[in-house]
Length: 444
Ligand code: LLP
Image 1 (cartoon, rainbow, N blue to C red):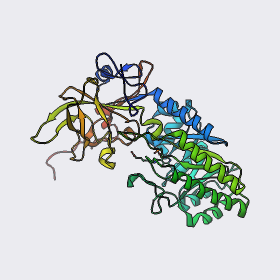
Image 2 (tube, rainbow, N blue to C red):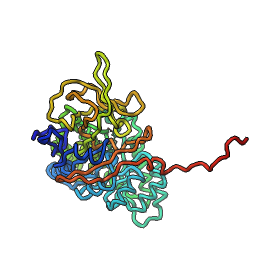
Image 3 (cartoon, rainbow, N blue to C red):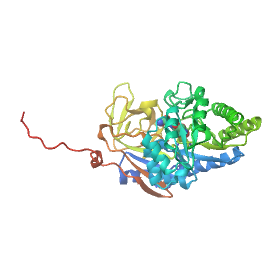
Image 4 (cartoon, rainbow, N blue to C red):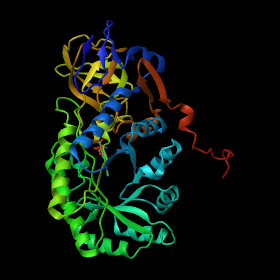
């Protein structure tokens, strides 16, 4: 059995048939049983990442802390339950995510509601459910929340998400901490926001928050953000005698997709923890609770996407195309962010690469090419292609473009695969439609 490297699930091996296995399951057998495209999630990898975060925070920070999984990375009932069982809270960003998490049995108190747009209905839903904290993004949202909570006997805990004006090195579409970002309150209106909260009996300022962006590999912007938040915390205490109890530097820890080094979570927690401890000591502040919101770094590596090669296309002097039965509708990331993935042939995983190919999705867009110039054994129709690190922001961003049903999702655990989200059917595609009343033809 051959061990695969750090972009594949921790339990990935190659068996004596040359098949990729995940957590004791032969993925070729799973593809036959459940058809492709198919997504697998390795339970052991998710658990290991959760454990690493728990330990890293315990060692890296003297104060209390909690981990809120950013459910936008991937959410359904089983995933919500899994995270709760691992001792994680949830960061939800819409009424839909909140609904799924509540229906999965996650206590509302362990959730934070995020988003630059929260509709009145979503805020009402969150207040009624009793979400732990609402992370306020705009002055308008604050005004609405103030109004909605004015008769509450218990004030709602809120955090203010600030736009810190910190540039983090990542793709422009997933950077969020820079000054022109649509997210967060500009620092210039922080005082106004605080005044508003002080005049709102239904609101309690519990904490300060930033989220700098996603797929980050540098500690420095996080440390800079902690300093900036502590300066505001110190000002709040000196000016209004308000002591905040929570600080959050958001999520965004980067993962390896191809040749990158995975971010060392212990080192990250140590840098952030140290910055908080030293920053609080220097300002005479008590240690706040540190809340972090990882999404990708919990779930990406646990996921493997399986596709069948349906056809190939050769042209002189150019790499061959492998045409697969999925693509941008189940993984928009290559088209949207030029994201790179690594792949292997899951049914011939022991074979060495012999050529560079492009892997084309099935959707009617020239931009639907999942991989370019990837080295593989000579592949033909019927081969099974596996993409690594496919757990985050793939199915959660999936669409029904071209009216292709979305793939099934299996959780694999100790040799057993459990279907946690079935494949969509053609009937699902018209479930929301209403037919027009029958019309007489040829009249008028
Ligand atoms: N907290 C907040 C407030 C966020 O907006 C996000 C992600 C996270 C936490 C989690 O970030 P993570 O640890 O997963 O990097 N679709 C893009 C990523 C968008 C991230 C949006 N916000 C992608 O596929 O790269």
